[in-house]
Length: 228
Image (cartoon, rainbow, N blue to C red):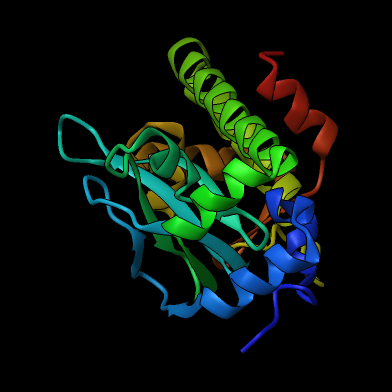
């Protein structure tokens, strides 16, 4: 079992503000989980009893629209924390969190989180900042979905994916998504996403290597994302 004090992941989230004593408490009480590819870490409408800290792996946050179609709201990776908003608001989970690949996750009980919030102002403040950033990202996403053409949304999404996941040793975006998942991210039909990706490849803006996507002209992609 990993020790929270030695875990480098805490540098990337609110856990970095914890004292050594608080980290020891979390380490003693936490549960380590393996979420297999395709499994849910969180399920929309369920109650939550603690905070999840992703140690490694990648996932997607989704919601079903009124037509029953999956909409991908955001992507998650190692260093992200989930569940704190529901803990503080005492609301049910608002989104599904689904593994895109096997994920290793630490679960910290709700009681430990609430106790630490009361005792550690910096931890509380960082959680509030995280929630505020999530709300701001959601508002930006809604605005873009409503105002931008689908081609612009695709270009922006590809840039976003490279920024959060980086690239692999072939310089491809380091996450594997189906064409349907890309379509569900930009709010269009799968056939439309396939056609737009093919057009970007034809224009030598990206390359498609199997399921992998490689950005080869980032400035052109950025111009497309901005409507030029």
